[in-house]
Amino acid sequence: MTANLSRASLLAASAAALTALALAPAGAQAAITTFGSPLSVPATLNTSENLNYAGTNTPVPPNPEAPNGIFHTYHNGADTALWNTVLASGAPAAPETGQALEVMLEGCAQPARGGPSPLNQIHFQDITPLPGGGAKVNLTSQPFEIPICGQDGANGSTVSSYEPVNLCVSKGDYVDFNDEGGYVENIYRNGVPYEVIGATMGSKMDSFIRGGGTNNGATLSSDYRTAMEGFAANANEELMLQVKLGTGPDATHICAGGTGGLPPPLPPLHLRPQRSAISNQRFVSFAIYCRLMPRCVGTATVAYGKLLAGRTNFSVRGGTTSHVTMRLSRTFARLVGRRGPLGTTLTALVEGKSYAARFVVQHF
Image (cartoon, rainbow, N blue to C red; front, side, top):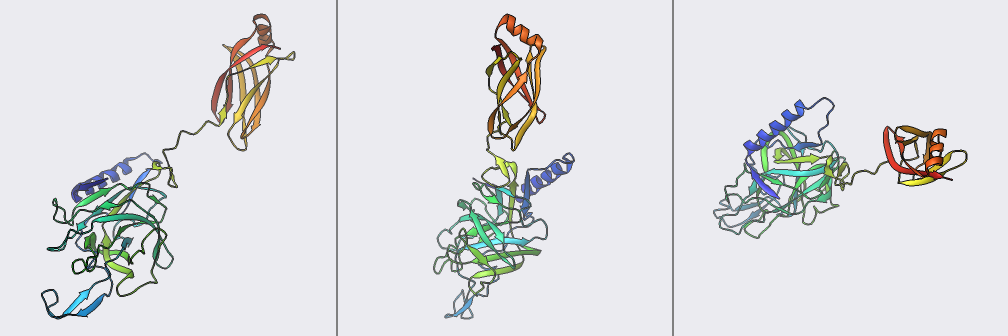
């Protein structure tokens, strides 16, 4: 799912969210948080010309593109990953483990003048930072489409909203922007210019370029640096990307830290309707299934209307069905003797919660 928003409306929504958190009761924990760029400036820089690679110079006959007879290629127009490591404002990494529910991306794909429409398929990825720099790719989202600059009013201030499916994120991880380069000979020589970078003093953005080198499991090594590809650190540049992170019930249970979509937990103790014969010594027996580990410890009672017929403490092993014996009162035993089988209520109290079932008591 993709939606376009204005930066002004996004900033207003962010302010409202911060106000709501500030007014939350003490001790309340928000299950949805945001991290990444505050999207406070327009995206004016792009992936073709504004990444810190040396590139190469090729002598060519003087022409409008190379009036000095030197054509500069910035880098290989191959698979690219961008991620923030330092932000002048905001946190670049996930504060908790959970699910990236929504990704807000500012910018668009610049088309070549007179050329074919640019490749505008993109992805988002969960990546784990590595000691000494670089990162490892853990998980890649489904493909999305970034707006094309100039179409339907899209520009460097256009904010698009994307909802990845089950993009799990661990605490301390980054969510990156991932493209497929989009190289076209003599047209998109440095790949498609994805205008998704803002000029922000104090921010730092890392990048990694390599054909087929940004897939799941890939290491975006900071040791691999060449003039045309590999790792680069980009000072005073900021990937204009913000993540809405869900945890607990607001994240799918498929992701660590999420419980959404799980069926309600089963009670620790199960009582089924049952019957028992009262012995000459007034004992009855009933079955309890315990799900707690290592044991269920509690109190059981049998009541006939307002009459307490019996009471006992029990301790049964977890993961098993056990039989508990209880001695009933003389008064109740006489009622059974005179009237025959009587329906009672069997109640078991465990960890402050009670569980009840119908219990028929009859003569031995």
